[in-house]
Length: 343
Ligand SMILES: NC(=O)c1ccc[n+]([C@@H]2O[C@H](COP(=O)([O-])OP(=O)(O)OC[C@H]3O[C@@H](n4cnc5c(N)ncnc54)[C@H](O)[C@@H]3O)[C@@H](O)[C@H]2O)c1
Image (cartoon, rainbow, N blue to C red; front, side):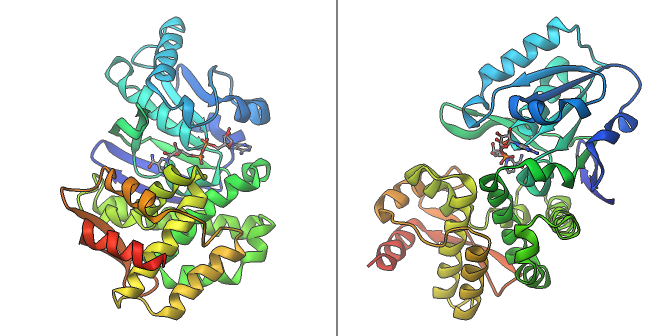
């Protein structure tokens, strides 16, 4: 097991990589625990949960809403949960985001923790203290920064995760190599076959290194005033692909990273062979590097990006593999670049 800490304004989060869900009980405080999970995770793993009341939500982004939150509050009231109740979210990123928000707001805040069961939750969603729900079609529009007391990332649970969900986590793992660590990127390149087979040792190393990279960024800039923006590499374009093509988050981030790498190349920051390495790695991990798309639709979706300010947009670029830089770019220049790229 590897232990990594995130030091947030609301407290310290201890991330236990390689710890097992079956050992959760030993980390729980004395007193009452309520577990929040989703239907699929409950079907697979409820037999490993410690004795506790369980609130089960539906699966998918459509359930990451204020309505589901209200259902959780309702059940907490029914269960007579009080300020001493400890909440544990067991599931992927959706369970994490919504259970963290429910715990942070019910009776002005309960203590809480997560067991991350998807690869994306292990390397990304449960690290860094962002909790929240979608609102009227806007992703993560309502939420809080609040660190879970601990997170268990049980690598064994990945065996039941569908391949499309593994791909979502792998896109974030490649992102971490791109923005922060060229040696890590090379390690991923060298182990694509072991990754395809979900080799325990290799997956443990990936989760550990990715968590260490994200935790280091969050420790510098928890509230995303500067450094944390680098974690959005591939995501500004990615969110636009997600909206216009209706593809999954992992597919969209993969396409978005290719675009951001090409933009970095065209700005003279990244060598052409480094762009090729990124594309080649994504392909070997079964992630797409190109998709038929209408550049004007992608541009229109980009203009709605909530991180845009007036006529400028923050783009995360690579200044060589393993080093991200955030640049402000005129929205018009980005439109021209996107249009020229597709001709
Ligand atoms: N808070 C953050 O910093 C942050 C960062 C990145 C993403 N997110 C959020 O995370 C969410 C996506 O997370 P996700 O990709 O984990 O999606 P998810 O929570 O929907 O999980 C994906 C699917 O896999 C199932 N699943 C989870 N673990 C499983 C397992 N071990 N075996 C079998 N099935 C399993 C789930 O039931 C679900 O159906 C998005 O809502 C996104 O906004 C949050």
